Amino acid sequence: MPKISALCRALTCGAALTVGLTVAALAAPVKLTPANPQPSGLKPGLSVRYAYPSDVKSLAAARSALKYKVEQGAPLKGLDYRDTELGQNVLTAKRAERVVADIRGYVRFDAPGIYTIDFLTNDGLHAVVGGQVVGEFDGRQPCEETFAVEVEVPEAGWYPLKALWFQRTNTACLHMRAGPAGKRPKWMPNAAFGH
Image (cartoon, rainbow, N blue to C red):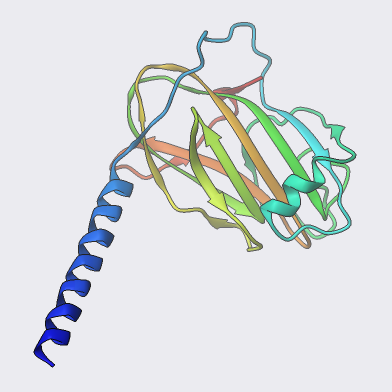
């Protein structure tokens, strides 16, 4: 029995070390890549295309819906869309429910540094800024936060933004927040987005 006990301790220690290293790696800020070249003459807000599937419960279903009939929507002013009322159209879509949005454009950071980014979303979201996933939730939820992500912004300027978002039923929201590391993230102003 001592050999089994020693083996169990070794496995437990190894697993704990692996988990610890993984957590430490995840805790390091991810480095964003600025747009190269930096865009000029951007229009305010973000470009968006919509799909209106018969149902959508996951990011995979949302991606699939975008392979079929897609419609260009009016540009988003930014990413500060508060929780809707029942029956109110979401974002700039023509429907209140079962909506998929493919959002693209740029977000501007005015200074280099370490920032914390998070989102509030209802329902699913996969958001990429500067080549890094900075917000993700695959499922359905009320208007709640994603996990905060620390990012390194190497220089002031525009960073490419791509987001896949879906709303299934009832109410919907989508917000992006950011702030210097160690401070509470604040709503990103509409002026920080362009397309």
